[in-house]
Length: 457
Image 1 (cartoon, rainbow, N blue to C red):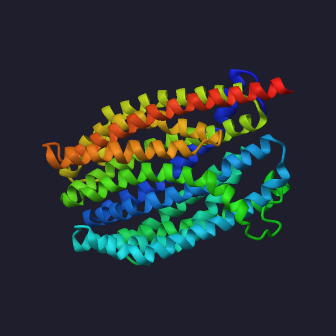
Image 2 (image 1 turned 180 degrees about the vertical axis):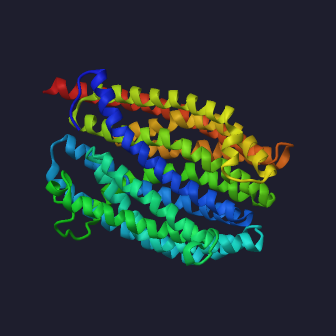
Image 3 (image 1 turned 90 degrees about the horizontal axis):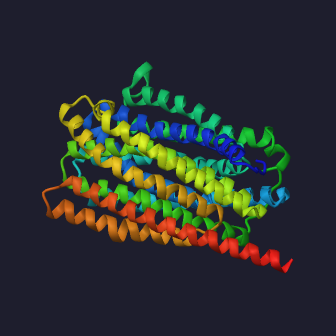
């Protein structure tokens, strides 16, 4: 990354950072899409089982990934301050943290997975598929979280094309393994939805191995000497990453978990409704990759500029990113509005399921517009290392306001399952407004601090 002086230069650098991240996130989302889509084509019970399994796994995965990506603003600010020599040490501590997180997840899953699935009102076949799907994925937990640390460092240097390349390798690997393991092609075992879990675990090992090759052999990582020297676990360094990463992780967890909680609450509805809801959520999640990618880009760019003391440039990147996300959300809303039937047909051949998916997608238009404001705003705040208020805002907006409203509408009105989506829309809209307000306060505070420093000097 380089300092920029004009809006045109900022736009070019923003797109240079953003485009590979967007391709990366779309490819990662496509992996989940193909897991869901290919499982659905094997059978409705497999689609529902993978939906339940995914609803339990994704909040855990993304929340804990959020803790680990706290490394991104740390590294980007170090680079902005020209303290490259400290990067390798920070990355090694991130690897230690990823191992701690991995063992925590595996222990939690061993203790809680059976009771949680047993508590839910699921058909026996759906429960069995969900359990075996998650058991298969557990074999890829350690490389997945290790890769998150390496990717956070790679992206913080501005080399987002490397992450894109790694993910583009992963996509055909995952889809190919799904083809073999879900349907039992070419002599492989016919595993149904469980095969999607096995394929994902293998894919996690592949992307971790490829990331290690880049870290050891490619510049600028080779010059930073990442993972070339052993550093013992440092409680102080782990604490620094946790102070930034835990609020980020909780923010992501609160947002993703509320969607998964809705899916779990909807387990009282029939299998067709669960499958249609999850298909609509899956496609909306793919659209969410646009504001999420902008969010990640803004964390890198704002962190770099804030670390260098160029606060005007940091504000300009904020406006550029949030404005771009808002414009893109309007475009994706048109896709959902006019191509809903085609989208629904990607997930099922059952006319009843298609009709339900199409209806759910109409509601998805509204909450993805709110996401386009809230998510990039969080990215800017992370660039400033202002992370604690954001997770409080997310908790209040999604869990104190959105989910209860959805529950009341779903359980006590004629809206049924659609009531949950209205609650999600309400929570996301309130969260977006509160996060924007927080950003304005943070930017004013940084400006005042910088002015005071200039006066003293």
